[in-house]
Each structure stands twice: as C-alpha cells, then as structure tokens.
Image (cartoon, rainbow, N blue to C red; front, side, top):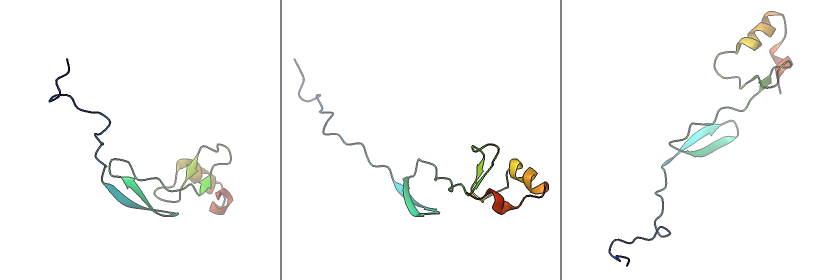
Length: 80
C-alpha cells in the first residue's frame, strides 16, 4: 500500500532554473548558464598544414603561427 503523505510526483517537480549571465561574443551578446564556460571566440586564423590549429586573434599567438611569421609569412595569409 502506498503512503499518500510520502508519495511525491516526479512529473510536477521542476528543476530550478540556473542563473544566467550575458557574455559578449563576436556575433553580439549571448546568454549562457553561470555554470557553463563562456564561449571561446570564433576562429579567425587557420594553420594551412593542420586545419585543427586555429586562433581567434585574442591572447598569445600560438607557436605554429609564430613559426610561420618568423619565416616571413604575413598574418593576413592565415585569415579564414
């Protein structure tokens, strides 16, 4: 026999909504849950030898890009 005082419905309980914050991206403002990491910037530069090597143009230049630039390549050569 089910004890009606202790029985609870799982369908009526709602998960509390996580607080959200606004994050500025290249495409505008995007809202993400506070627990999520902010989205990384869209890649603007790509390594021609390995297309998985990309750089958004923010932060330190990656080593693969530094090597090309030291050889005389221009930054505009790697734009996507």
